[in-house]
Length: 87
Image 1 (cartoon, rainbow, N blue to C red):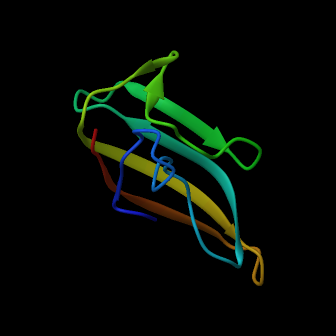
Image 2 (cartoon, rainbow, N blue to C red):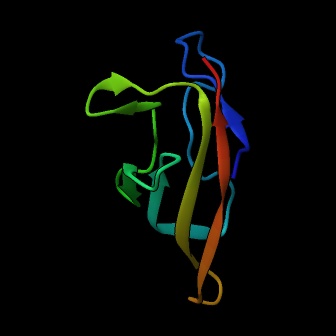
């Protein structure tokens, strides 16, 4: 998972999403500092553009939790961390 992104429209690191091979995203949730849900994605919609309800969120650190299915084993794996959003 990336550790930072900058959704400023310059075409470089404008989105936050799981990257890599050998897995399928089941669900990903991103929260604000108070635990409010900012974004929820799944395998069909897994790219966060730094907005909530169509409005840009402020710069800061956003916790996430995600579940993936490993394609080789079929095993479900959970990951959590933080992503830094820079404007």
